[in-house]
Length: 289
Image 1 (cartoon, rainbow, N blue to C red):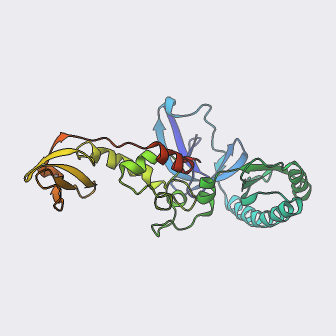
Image 2: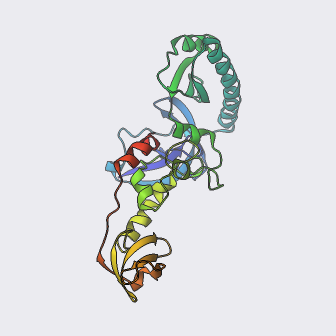
Image 3: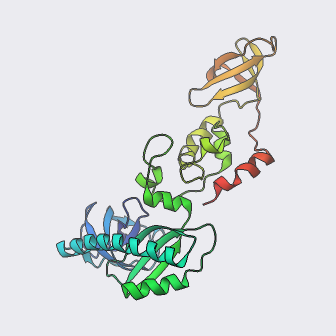
């Protein structure tokens, strides 16, 4: 077993494990740790706890120290430097005529490296840009190309639901989202309806999927033949969350369909949810990161 703390470097980011080096820490405490990027200042997101060795990536690095008032002040100064670096980098991008969009800038705590995050449609030759930036800032420069989902997570905004982006408020890591999830949840396969502001499938399709998967086990699907209190019929519409079915009755196929609760019907022959080839081809781009 290993005693660890969980540390985040962004407000809504991945949690990394560190050895607390014998100190008892609380959520929200600022700490100084060494990462693959260099010395960083982060916040404790998980208090001291014991985890099995298999749950921890070796070697487990020790926390360097709990952040001092001077450390916190330095981190705040770095945030101001990032704003200036952002403006300078944007100017340099224009000067070099590069087809890239600068998204964010991060200084490592020790100022040994500056990371510039950008998006672009394809590969970008930014070697000359890196030289210019290194000349201006006199430190190591790293440019990282990110996807549109990462851009949305960094910048934030409001989703089509009217609430702040899930990725920017509580989702620590992105999970794969598929068109099949949208189909199984009864969503209209209209790109506008199932994609977020980033242009990719909405993250909420993933974390709501377990509920829909459970409901699908006991709910007849569209096309299923069921036995109802009014006789046999075919399911023509389903509301999984309310548990209601719309059934076209065999004895009166031209009449208006009847509505039943899922608990009042018995499945004679269930149907399957299938994605058509044209649906996959049309929406495949929405699955990309």
